[in-house]
Image (cartoon, rainbow, N blue to C red; front, side, top):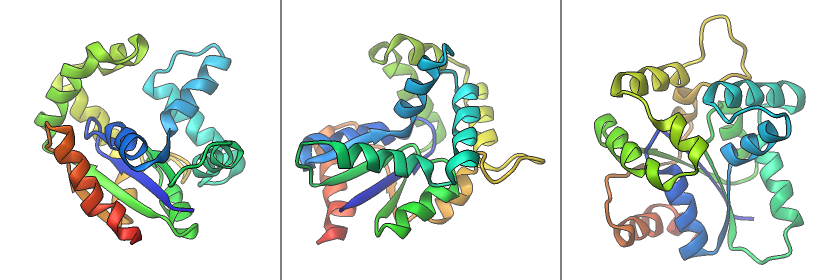
Length: 198
């Protein structure tokens, strides 16, 4: 199975890259955030970032640090459609990066200038689902502060919590996503990601 893990900074376009992998290259795309939102809905909780952080840590403590990858693979294996591979986005714990590598996959780190990412995120809130759009409406300072909290494991927290800087250190491919044209981004995905499997 061709397995692609996608991580990166907030607003860098991780889901957009996952969707293009699905639409243009035949991959099954599963955002980890969707799995978390679905579970939060079952529990009657809003899909706020703090709830997703708590739930993902709970799952990692119960089922191992690579649990989100394993859940995505279970969905992939029970699908009756034929895919070129599986792409899982929004990885925020180094155990997920390790699981991708254990299974022979590649890890992509997506980034762009913070102001560019913030402006793109604010411009796209009208096209997102209502609850997620509300969560994305924040000041630039709040955006930077929230990202800083997620980049490094917080003092006193355990290994099941977020630590995106450690995920970045395990990345195989780095993609600077300043593309405004989807055709250009698709070409970059083909060149930087798809061809690694050739």
